[in-house]
Length: 245
Image (cartoon, one colour):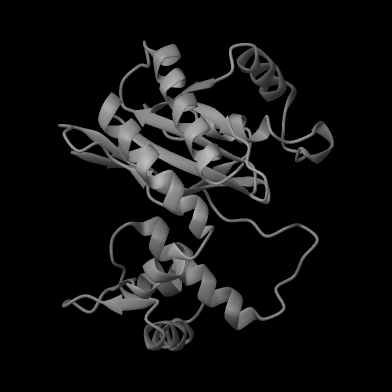
């Protein structure tokens, strides 16, 4: 059984306005389809985008032309295979070096292991691996986002930023949680990003790359958080060594 993690809503910087409304809407359609998890009808896309059906149809046709969306046999719209090729080019060296380590951790501890990187004031999942032999696991989709400072991965990434670069959304409570976690070198969260999910994360500082973290997530309570953190630290050290970080 796989439990899919939800994706936080996207936010543009408060001081910016899209230079192209058409391009912005096209990108938003990709985000809507990613968040939905299942194929959508054109009317559903239009409703969530907040435009007339004809506008949504033209945008989807353009995305289909570039292979970024496709249609099911029932005519519903889903993300296209071309996106996978584009995603593989993002931080290619980091992805290639992290994948074997994340796979080893996932299979060693029997939990989904994933890598997140900083993107403005959010953390985005770059690579995710589910354990090979597990009756129940959490599916952490690449591209999933959540706010910086929220959840174990969010605080692990935040710990790599100087205080002057923290977003205004960071509360005193998050700062206290971060201070307590830094004393043991790893972060733990329960029911923060997604209800009923638990996570353990460690920071992954890398030269030439955005602040990052690796984490494991599960449905059950992490009674072995320290052991999981130690395994994650080993993987983080291996990744840094591999890419010269």
